[in-house]
Image (cartoon, rainbow, N blue to C red; front, top):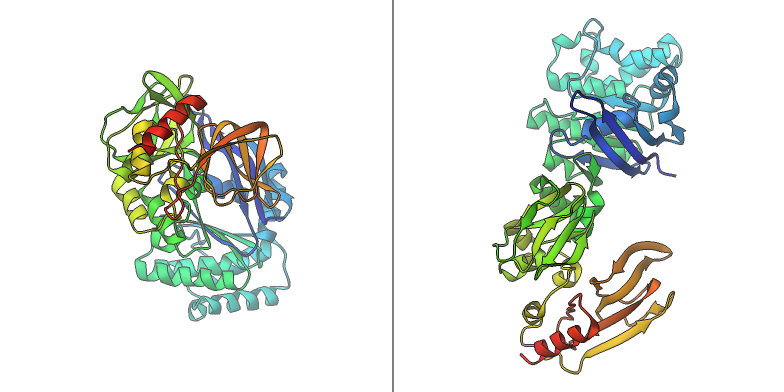
Length: 455
C-alpha cells in the first residue's frame, strides 16, 4: 500500500464566472521513503494538491488516503488531530509564531498532540534544533534570526511528532541559493533516515535531485504522459524538459498546424481530442497521453498533415520546442530507435520513402493474423496494427494498448486484444528495423510498401 494514495481527486472553486477547476481527476501514489518533487507553472494546481494531501483543503470529489487514513472523510477536528500525529508541514514563509521563542515554536506541535511530559517535549525540541544547527538560538524570537534560520526551525517543528510524511510548499522559495542548498541537504538526510517528503518547488535544479519529479499542468498530473512520449530520457533531462514545456489550451475546431507549415514543436495531448486530417478526411484521432509532431522534426521537413481540435470541447496540450526535441534525439537521450519508440502515427507513401531511405525492403514484408489472446512472439520484428488492437504486457500488468495505425518494436509479451489484430512487419536484416503504416486498406499498404521498396 502506498503511503500517499490519491484517486480521481477533483477540486473546484466557485467564482462569479463559474467553477474554477484547480485539480482535474488527479491520481497519485507516493511510496514510503520517497522524495518527490512537484513542479509546474504558477496556477497549475501544485499548492492545491499539497493542501489536499495535508487535509488543509478538502477535495470536491475523489479520495485522499495517507498511511491508510481516508483524509477526505475526516471532519475538521479529526483532521487537525490526525495531522498533528502523522504529518509535518513546511511553508514558504515559515509561519513561526512571532511571540514564542524558537524552542517554544518547535514544542507547540507536541503540546497539541499531548506527547510526553513538558520536560520530554523541551528536550526533544532542543535536540531537533541541534539537528538543524539552531540549538544555540533556541531562546531567541523568530525576528532575531535570518529567513534561512527560520526555515530550519520550521523543519524542526515539522519533525516534532516524528511524522511519516512531510509536505513542503515552496520551502526554498524565499531563500537565497546558498541557504536553499543547506535546507535541501537537510531534506536529503531526512529521506535517508526513512522520512517521506513531498515538495512543491519552482527550482528545477533542486527538483532534479529528488527521487521522482511529478509535473502538474492545468490541474492534471502528466508525469506518465511525458515519460511515455520521451521514453529513455534521464530524470535530470526530464526535469529540464518539464521546465521547457509550454502548456497550451486551444478551443474546439482550432488548427494546431496545417499541412505544409514549418515544423516547430513536438506536442503531447493532456486533455481533449485532436484530429489528424489528410486529403480532407480524418485519418487518426489523438487523445490524452498521445503525442504528435515528431516525425517532421526528426526528418527536418514541413508538416505532412493538418492537426485540429475535434468538435465538442477544447484541448490542453504541452508543446516542446523543436530544437530541444531534436537535441534530445541527436544526443541519444531518447530510447534507441527514435522513430519506432517515439513516432507513432499514420504515414503516406512519401513518408515511407523517407523512413526507409535506400534500404531494399523487397521480400521482407510479411502479413500475420492473430486471434484474441494469441501471443505475438516474433521478437525480432517490428509490427504495425492494421486492424483491431494489441495489448503490451509487463508481467501481468497492461502497459499499453496498440490500436489501429500504431506500431511497436518488440513482440515479446504481446497478445492480441479482444477484437483480434492484423499485423504487418518489415525486417531489414542488419539495418535498423523500421515500420511504416498507411492507416489505409491492406491493398493500399501493399502498394505503398512496394513503391518504397522500388526507390
